[in-house]
Length: 255
Image (cartoon, rainbow, N blue to C red; front, side, top):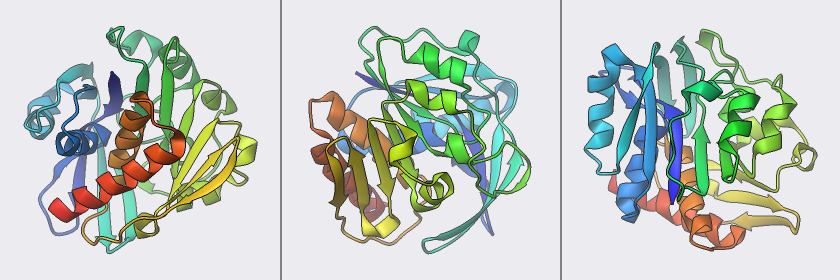
């Protein structure tokens, strides 16, 4: 069984009403498309929980609310594949004591930070006991401060000690530098409409995709959960990456 932990967000696209965002929502969209079961653990302030959880619950994947005190919020200006991001509010940091009781069957876990403060190293170490973790690289390169997002590599190296799979986009990979130096067994770098690159001990593999237009916000979360689902079903990394690119293309085509 797979599961996801992450903060919900209130996403404010230019010229549009605010909407639910964050990995719990976008991963649930992908899971509904794939017809798979898992568990989603979503966190935000209690005052925002009804509003932000409703779209996630409507997608059918079991969703467990984790009580929070703050709700993340982002201003987003997306034009094609170009996007400007502004942090309007910072969500909760998950401490080891905040971790919900996960079913024993959960062996693969997608940890989906929005900012660097979301999941400290100690929390990841606790989550990794008996599990394999896929970490979204946003938790390495997005500073926890208000204003326009400027990526940097000022993260705690201990964070990666518990990570089996790291998912990055091109900008995040550029901020981190040499991929091999990260020491993570499986690293995926997504290239938007141009597919992805997989790095393992066996070397580097390119994964092609079918270019599809539409709003690409959240496609990284969809890619991650699709990859995790494939790996949990025994697929090798390259097979899993190919399957994940297909899921993202299908998701964009049905949006």
